[in-house]
Amino acid sequence: MIGFRHVSLTLGDFALQDVSFTINEGDYYVIIGPSGAGKTVILEMIAGLHLPDEGEILIHGRDASGVPPEKRRIALVYQDYSLFPHMTVEKNIGFGLAMQKRPKEEIDRRIRELLRTFGLESFRDRFPGTMSGGEQQRVAIARALASEPEILLLDEPFAALDPITRERLIADLRRVHRETGLTIVQVTHAREELLRMATRCAVVLDGRLVQEGPANQVFETPESTAVARFVGMENILNGVVAANADGLASIDIQGRSIVAVSDACPGTAADVVFRAADVTLHVRDGEESTARNRFGAVITAVVSFGGPLTEVYLNAGFPIVALVTRQSAEDCDLAPGMSVLASIKASAIRVIPESA
Amino acid sequence: MAQTLVLRDRCLVSFSLLGGVILGLTVLALLNLTVKELADIPHVVQVAADAKVIDSIVLTMGAGANAVAILMIFGVPLAYVLARTNFRGKGLVETIVDIPLMLPHTVAGLLVYMLFMKRGLIGAPFYNIGFHFEDAYPGIVIAMLFVASPYFVNSAREGFEKVPVHLENVARTLGASRFSAFRHIVLPLSARDIYNGMIFAWGRAIGEFAAIIMIAYYPMVISTLIYYRFTTSGIKESSTVAFVMIIACFAVFMTLRYLSRFIGRHDDRV
Image (cartoon, rainbow over all chains, first blue to last red; front, side, top):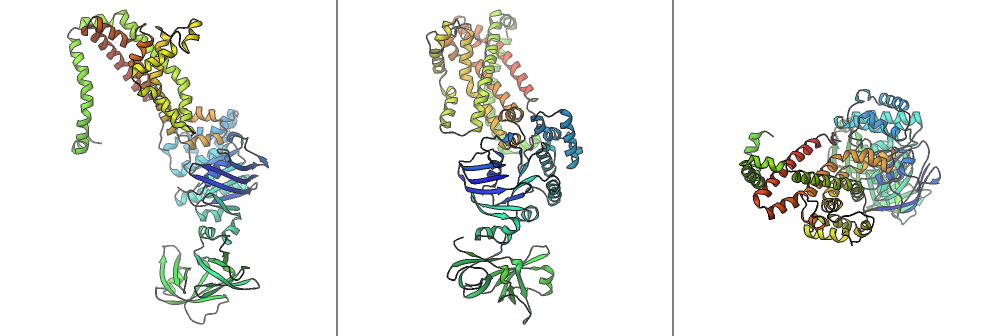
């Protein structure tokens, strides 16, 4: 439906370089990356607000460069809501339909429908300046949906909202996506949103698209250390592949060996990445474990954020971060200086050769 | 802020005293003239009723308004382009916009005269079809337009720049062409700055003297009339005309300022 083919664009100091991806009809496509990576520019390019310096943007398989934003049927919602401050909620929502010169009865009916869907009936005659962030965001999304676009672009839609409002909006969006089959492209720097909403996703770092694919695949099998760091792999260790037997590689890390499922060749420098949640801690000796990797380690710090989980920092000759429930941390009296056994399954570890 | 608080703030008090010097100068000059004029009220009434004086004031204000109307047609597009685009040589274009601001008024007058005189580059073809700039109303309007243009263009541009480009982008994705987005979003949201630009430009146009007399000594705008009376009849005659003009200007600009309250009002907390 939307295709970027080797798209490059320079805007002042910022450059988007050789970006290619495809978004299919009905996708909930999430573009993640840190602030300033070029995510918003990609959305604005889909909307037709910037044309590429090089490469091609296809919509429905055809080059879109000659199609101005107003003819693309692609709606855009910015993080700052961008409601028209001189118009009431009603006029804001009806703006697109009025621009398309639809009959007045149709406009009125559609506005009523959307006000009801988003619980905004009582705000009909209010001006945006008098409303809260969450209310404004709902108006912005209602306005975007009013003229029934084929694609909805969302720029960090939840960033400025409190948790309760965010949950409600996420529920609204999921319903819209499910009921209308609308293609949604969302930009975010928050990983949690990605896991919950996305069908496919792309990681953008520094103006380049570094990985693209089904969301859980990108999340579980990052192809580079930078992506691993960004999708929240807490443990990233540098080592060298010492041996590989039938797809089971042992990687030498500061004198100790980690075994992982990988086809990396012996002799290559590689990063070993795994999630803190995949590390199991054993306090008593001789506890059974089927994990291939077992390391004696000393706890260096125990950090609790007040939630149900506690982070445990370990020294096993190299640093490891583990995640345990707060309950078990308390039951086992985990404290700095304590010796424990840390185990990690070979299948939970990802090996990324240095060149990637 | 409560008044007592302001009085306790030493920084604000000293700033007010320093700033008061400027206000004081204007107030003193006006009072000085007013006191002298009020000593002979019948004379003021007689001058105010003088057809020549009335015609001249109407001519000055009318030509100024005419210049502003033309500025709107050409200045709004220029201001929008300057606000929304970046191009090579933009700095040069901006300098050109500001030139009339920096030039001595006689130089501005000379530039306008050489272009619009009977044998001028633009004046000549118009002269041939019977349209005169020299010593005629169009000459006054052109001179006013030239000196007032930077005030209008810069003010309108500032207004356009204040409208977030995101609003325009959203309007376009909702189906508005660039011109529709300009008309429905940008223009209403910058109405106040455009209005202020119109007032500045008009005020500047009304106040022009040197540039106007070089191309059109006649018909006499108010500055020319005052200068003429000053050189032929002395200070008493000219100062009374000046007094009448001050009152007219004061009334008009107070009204315009008051009206600006109702223009482009919206809650911009968004």
